[in-house]
Image (cartoon, rainbow, N blue to C red; front, top):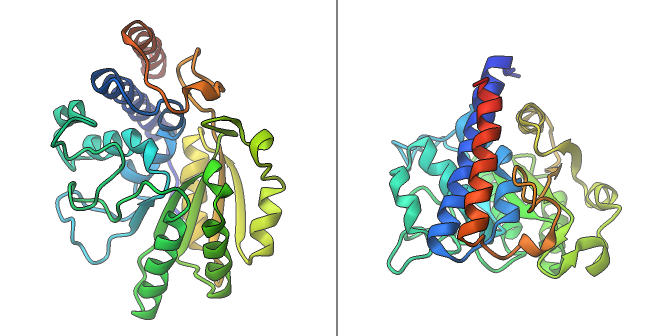
Length: 285
């Protein structure tokens, strides 16, 4: 297993901070979209697209050996787009077109619109089924590619998710990793008030999964968990990533009201200033 040096961690934290600034700038320009989830998942997407944890190549999108990244909770796509742009999939300037008419950066990812996407997403609860199907097909073809499915905790309210989890466990899909954004919020409030999920780890264990629990805002922890998942045999892996919704922006953190709305101009400028100040501290300026 590879390890990240302290200097590499610092650079990745700077990248995650840049991605968070991109998210706010995109939402300000679009005047629509989701804030809390994308900010909270910036560290996870930084690991997926800016380290060697996942095999991918922005210059060779059809590379047969690439791992598959499936975003189930498509509404957090601003973090996906920002991570992809910063990794070289398309020009960073294009981020300003989020949700605009004719853009490749739809409000939910559209595979036929943007090269580099593995799936279209939007209907919550369907991503794990898609990812499990990919993993099953890859194993049938004796391929070593990994499939990583990003999910929200709120979408676990959908029954289809549990059908997919049961099926993946039964078929011992050890090339499948689900990363659950356990931020404890959804659009109407806190998950444990709307539809309690705990004990979440025991549920996945009982379905035949290997479960890892991590701090999803700790880049080293995310990186190590993704690599550890590759070493698990005959079981799919569920990484429960505990994140802070709205991470990096004080007035958004842990507030479910920011799940599905963008900042206005004043709020956006305040958020960007806070993230720039944080970025300076990370880089030692």
